[in-house]
Amino acid sequence: MPLYILWIPASYLAGSIPVGILLAKMRGTDPRKVGSGNIGATNVMRAAGKTIGILTLAGDILKGLIPTALALYFRQPSLVVAAIGFAAFIGHLFPVFLKFRGGKGVATAVGVYLAVSPLAIMINVVIFVLVLLKWRYVSLGSLVGTSLIPLAFLVLKEPCEYIYLSLVVGVFIFIKHKDNIRRLLEGKEHKM
Image (cartoon, rainbow, N blue to C red):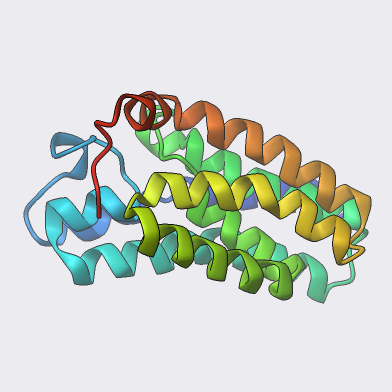
């Protein structure tokens, strides 16, 4: 039996771990009942403070990074690596442990991309920070970075499977950010 038959569902389960909720509950709060109600790092920071928000960001990145990096370490084909990374990402968006109501997936996608192309992520992090410093919208920085990652993969000559992965992931991220996009257009989005 090929290893990836077990690896893909295991990656989904890893992505489903609600890091933000688990950490915020240690502070006696639930991010789903604060601010945007999202379980990601930005809202967890609002609900439980900067330290818990940063730990949530790290945990969500690791959910994508570890399964994908292991797939690369064990020399799986690019298609399998992409499928494993996508499973972790989908786990974060639709976690089995939270009745399939998860986060927006940016940090977990960053973890996946960090495994497959650290240089692409380094470029995107610089762009994200510049957007954040200029306009102070985390959502805008995330959306700009999401839009540019396929281009970064293309320029860096990454396997086409990773380019397709980033396009599909990007569609999900934009759908999950539909309320943020509306607020950005209306000038009502929360600033950092």
